[in-house]
Length: 275
Image (cartoon, rainbow, N blue to C red; front, top):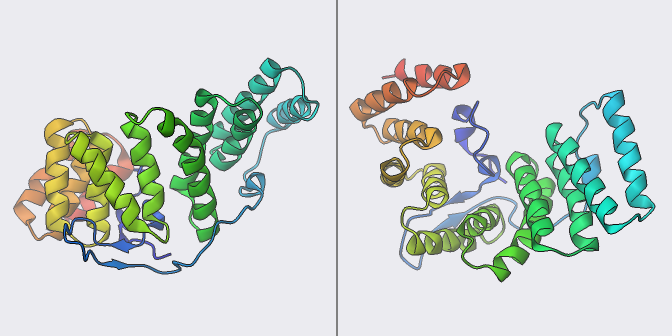
């Protein structure tokens, strides 16, 4: 899949889920002939072992605890011990930023003892992994797992627009990106002030080069959610790319007052230097 040029400005703002894997998609063309262009659209889901997807080092203490917890699971202990061990493994792997491994062990609990809470925990872990996945196989695998487990919760409770937004974003990087765009539009139709919906539509507009439309989305976002730092930052980027330089400068100066993060401030300064 093609990587967005937005990689250069996302440093320090890692919560933008799936942005690196997004295809080129025209997201705000309301006509039925909305344009879609992407690479590697024929990729299929891969069921690679999730615990092998990371190479980060683990401390001896963590390794011993992980081995003990895995043993409890392998021995098929009581329901409570099984769930507790799976959840603890999820915590450990999350702390190591191994979100796909966290999802794997949380999914063991969800499969062994079905419950919406366990499904949601597994789905959220896989969604975090999806946000950091960089190659096609990992994107596809974690997206599929996200849809599987969060979909179970959404099916029982269709009012969970937060979960619908996450599922929508996994479709955007699939062979059928318009399904994700349609879901995001449905979220905003039901809740026009939805923070995640507005933010993600703004990001997708940027990714497809629709910077004027992106400014509109981010303006809406910060109108209703002024504390959304990411939205404030990307509004400035959208102004810059839309050649609205005065607005871009004012917006970047505003964001500088909102954060002390050196990486974000460095990105802002790089834009200000070009104005």
